[in-house]
Image (cartoon, rainbow, N blue to C red; front, side, top):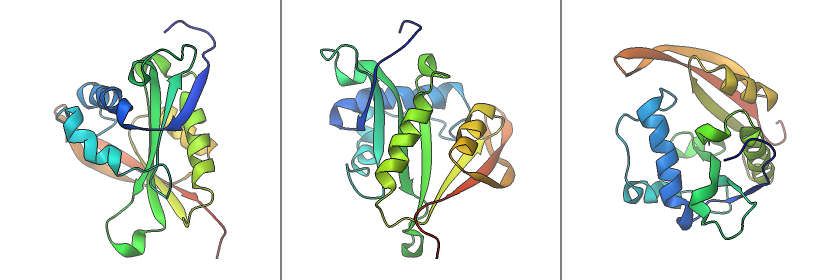
Length: 182
Protein backbone atom coordinates (compact mmCIF):
# COMPACT_ATOMS: atom_id res chain seq x y z
CA UNK A 1 0.00 0.00 0.00
CA UNK A 2 1.55 3.33 -0.94
CA UNK A 3 2.32 5.83 1.80
CA UNK A 4 0.13 8.88 2.03
CA UNK A 5 -3.56 9.41 2.27
CA UNK A 6 -5.79 6.37 1.96
CA UNK A 7 -9.53 6.54 1.43
CA UNK A 8 -10.95 4.18 4.05
CA UNK A 9 -14.33 2.50 4.20
CA UNK A 10 -15.52 1.15 7.58
CA UNK A 11 -18.40 -1.31 7.42
CA UNK A 12 -19.69 -4.48 9.11
CA UNK A 13 -17.59 -7.57 8.47
CA UNK A 14 -19.07 -10.17 6.16
CA UNK A 15 -18.41 -13.63 4.81
CA UNK A 16 -16.31 -12.27 1.92
CA UNK A 17 -13.83 -10.89 4.48
CA UNK A 18 -13.25 -14.22 6.23
CA UNK A 19 -9.98 -15.18 4.51
CA UNK A 20 -8.41 -11.74 4.98
CA UNK A 21 -9.60 -11.49 8.58
CA UNK A 22 -8.10 -14.91 9.31
CA UNK A 23 -4.79 -14.00 7.64
CA UNK A 24 -4.57 -10.75 9.62
CA UNK A 25 -5.29 -12.46 12.93
CA UNK A 26 -2.85 -15.27 12.11
CA UNK A 27 -0.12 -12.64 11.62
CA UNK A 28 -0.64 -11.56 15.23
CA UNK A 29 -0.66 -15.17 16.41
CA UNK A 30 2.60 -16.02 14.66
CA UNK A 31 4.52 -12.76 15.14
CA UNK A 32 3.35 -11.12 18.37
CA UNK A 33 2.12 -11.62 21.91
CA UNK A 34 -0.83 -9.31 21.24
CA UNK A 35 -3.06 -12.40 21.27
CA UNK A 36 -2.45 -15.44 23.42
CA UNK A 37 -3.66 -17.81 20.72
CA UNK A 38 -0.63 -19.88 19.76
CA UNK A 39 -1.78 -21.85 16.70
CA UNK A 40 -2.91 -20.28 13.42
CA UNK A 41 -6.52 -20.75 12.30
CA UNK A 42 -8.03 -21.77 8.99
CA UNK A 43 -10.85 -19.63 7.66
CA UNK A 44 -13.28 -22.48 8.36
CA UNK A 45 -12.18 -22.52 12.01
CA UNK A 46 -12.81 -18.76 12.23
CA UNK A 47 -16.24 -18.89 10.59
CA UNK A 48 -18.16 -19.34 13.93
CA UNK A 49 -16.32 -16.30 15.31
CA UNK A 50 -17.33 -14.25 12.25
CA UNK A 51 -20.95 -15.37 12.53
CA UNK A 52 -21.05 -14.50 16.25
CA UNK A 53 -20.74 -10.81 15.26
CA UNK A 54 -23.95 -9.79 13.42
CA UNK A 55 -24.49 -6.38 11.83
CA UNK A 56 -26.58 -5.24 14.80
CA UNK A 57 -26.68 -5.86 18.52
CA UNK A 58 -23.94 -5.54 21.12
CA UNK A 59 -21.46 -7.92 19.47
CA UNK A 60 -20.11 -6.29 16.33
CA UNK A 61 -17.35 -6.78 13.82
CA UNK A 62 -16.33 -3.76 11.79
CA UNK A 63 -13.69 -3.83 9.08
CA UNK A 64 -11.68 -1.02 7.54
CA UNK A 65 -10.64 -1.39 3.94
CA UNK A 66 -8.93 0.67 1.31
CA UNK A 67 -11.83 2.08 -0.70
CA UNK A 68 -9.83 3.63 -3.56
CA UNK A 69 -10.67 0.86 -5.98
CA UNK A 70 -14.18 -0.55 -5.73
CA UNK A 71 -13.13 -3.46 -7.97
CA UNK A 72 -10.65 -4.78 -5.38
CA UNK A 73 -12.08 -7.85 -3.65
CA UNK A 74 -13.01 -7.03 -0.02
CA UNK A 75 -10.36 -9.19 1.60
CA UNK A 76 -7.48 -7.88 -0.48
CA UNK A 77 -7.74 -4.35 0.88
CA UNK A 78 -8.28 -5.09 4.58
CA UNK A 79 -6.61 -2.45 6.76
CA UNK A 80 -7.92 -3.70 10.09
CA UNK A 81 -10.92 -4.67 12.17
CA UNK A 82 -12.54 -4.00 15.53
CA UNK A 83 -14.87 -6.18 17.56
CA UNK A 84 -17.11 -6.09 20.58
CA UNK A 85 -17.61 -9.55 22.04
CA UNK A 86 -19.18 -11.06 25.16
CA UNK A 87 -17.04 -10.39 28.22
CA UNK A 88 -18.08 -13.65 29.90
CA UNK A 89 -20.74 -16.25 29.05
CA UNK A 90 -22.90 -15.79 32.20
CA UNK A 91 -26.13 -13.76 31.73
CA UNK A 92 -25.29 -11.11 34.34
CA UNK A 93 -22.38 -9.99 32.13
CA UNK A 94 -24.63 -9.26 29.14
CA UNK A 95 -24.30 -5.47 29.45
CA UNK A 96 -20.49 -5.66 29.30
CA UNK A 97 -18.38 -6.28 26.21
CA UNK A 98 -14.73 -6.92 25.52
CA UNK A 99 -13.42 -4.84 22.63
CA UNK A 100 -10.36 -5.21 20.47
CA UNK A 101 -8.82 -3.72 17.38
CA UNK A 102 -6.28 -5.21 14.98
CA UNK A 103 -4.57 -3.27 12.20
CA UNK A 104 -2.77 -4.69 9.19
CA UNK A 105 0.97 -4.23 9.77
CA UNK A 106 1.27 -1.86 6.81
CA UNK A 107 -1.61 0.25 8.18
CA UNK A 108 -0.27 0.65 11.73
CA UNK A 109 0.17 4.24 12.88
CA UNK A 110 -2.12 5.64 10.19
CA UNK A 111 -5.26 6.24 12.26
CA UNK A 112 -7.06 3.04 11.25
CA UNK A 113 -7.52 1.94 14.87
CA UNK A 114 -9.02 5.32 15.70
CA UNK A 115 -11.42 5.13 12.74
CA UNK A 116 -12.48 1.62 13.71
CA UNK A 117 -13.04 2.41 17.40
CA UNK A 118 -14.93 5.60 16.52
CA UNK A 119 -17.29 3.61 14.28
CA UNK A 120 -17.59 0.77 16.79
CA UNK A 121 -18.53 2.98 19.72
CA UNK A 122 -20.97 4.94 17.54
CA UNK A 123 -22.60 1.64 16.52
CA UNK A 124 -22.80 0.50 20.14
CA UNK A 125 -24.28 3.79 21.40
CA UNK A 126 -27.90 2.58 21.10
CA UNK A 127 -27.29 -0.85 22.65
CA UNK A 128 -28.08 -1.89 26.22
CA UNK A 129 -24.44 -1.79 27.28
CA UNK A 130 -22.89 -0.46 30.48
CA UNK A 131 -19.13 -1.10 30.18
CA UNK A 132 -16.47 -2.02 27.64
CA UNK A 133 -13.26 -3.79 28.66
CA UNK A 134 -9.97 -4.28 26.86
CA UNK A 135 -6.96 -6.40 27.73
CA UNK A 136 -3.58 -5.24 26.43
CA UNK A 137 -0.57 -7.56 26.44
CA UNK A 138 2.39 -5.54 27.64
CA UNK A 139 4.36 -3.75 26.45
CA UNK A 140 2.09 -2.08 23.89
CA UNK A 141 2.26 1.72 24.16
CA UNK A 142 0.33 2.29 20.93
CA UNK A 143 -2.66 0.29 22.19
CA UNK A 144 -2.53 1.94 25.63
CA UNK A 145 -2.58 5.39 23.96
CA UNK A 146 -5.47 4.39 21.69
CA UNK A 147 -7.56 3.17 24.61
CA UNK A 148 -6.77 6.28 26.69
CA UNK A 149 -7.87 8.45 23.75
CA UNK A 150 -11.27 6.69 23.87
CA UNK A 151 -11.74 7.24 27.60
CA UNK A 152 -10.62 3.87 28.91
CA UNK A 153 -9.03 3.84 32.36
CA UNK A 154 -6.48 1.34 33.60
CA UNK A 155 -7.99 -1.05 36.16
CA UNK A 156 -5.00 -3.23 36.93
CA UNK A 157 -2.51 -5.66 35.49
CA UNK A 158 -2.39 -9.43 35.56
CA UNK A 159 1.30 -10.18 35.92
CA UNK A 160 2.84 -13.01 33.91
CA UNK A 161 -0.63 -14.32 33.05
CA UNK A 162 0.22 -15.80 29.66
CA UNK A 163 3.16 -17.74 28.26
CA UNK A 164 4.04 -17.40 24.60
CA UNK A 165 7.36 -17.47 22.72
CA UNK A 166 9.02 -19.04 25.78
CA UNK A 167 8.35 -16.10 28.08
CA UNK A 168 5.61 -14.78 30.34
CA UNK A 169 3.55 -11.70 29.47
CA UNK A 170 1.57 -9.24 31.58
CA UNK A 171 -1.90 -8.06 30.55
CA UNK A 172 -3.22 -4.64 31.54
CA UNK A 173 -7.00 -4.34 31.82
CA UNK A 174 -8.89 -1.20 30.84
CA UNK A 175 -12.51 -0.12 31.29
CA UNK A 176 -14.74 2.38 29.47
CA UNK A 177 -18.16 3.54 30.63
CA UNK A 178 -20.90 3.11 28.04
CA UNK A 179 -24.45 4.45 28.12
CA UNK A 180 -26.02 6.47 30.91
CA UNK A 181 -24.85 6.09 34.51
CA UNK A 182 -27.23 4.63 37.07
